[in-house]
Image 1 (cartoon, rainbow over the protein chains, first blue to last red):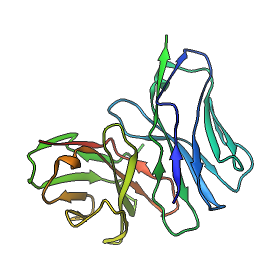
Image 2: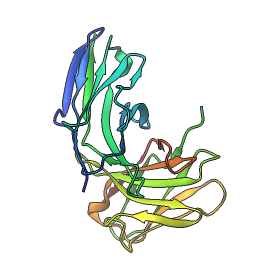
Image 3: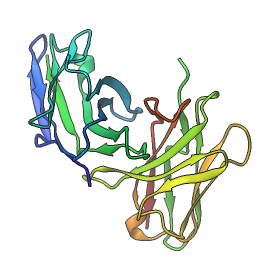
Length: 116
Length: 113
């Protein structure tokens, strides 16, 4: 069974600085999707970025980028030029694309604090 | 931008009572999901629903749980006889196509006393 691990329960970053959130996963599948979702306090989870495993190029979305290391089963999120609005819970998630299931498997989340 | 909505935001109930959690998915979406997150633990998949049928469910989704799409807009999760361990945040999600990214609602916090 697939698992997702986020080893950093909490991280802090100074405004305008860069922070990297870690995520590792375990799977025997070769084709899958990985996601980072952001959940501000009392708000819904919002997709930050998505990576297809068959793509070697790391996904980027404005100030957000990933470092996808398929062999190492690592999927870290880098936030550049951190802003106060980036403060939230960040969840890493895995979804199979071959096994006929479309459920997400989540990590436990990393709470990001942004310091002014 | 369209959003998934959930009501209530917080539900408090006594053990053994029935609760219904409500979700309004994005209007053109066809695939619906429930997840839950016990405090301090992972978000866990409960069930997926398509074409008025459950398409997949987890081990957590036992006979105490049921889902329904009673009309063209709502998607509900019913817990027949709540237990203390059902206390959690429950998230609804929807997609237009099965392979699409899931859009999540803000969650309902269920507290069972």
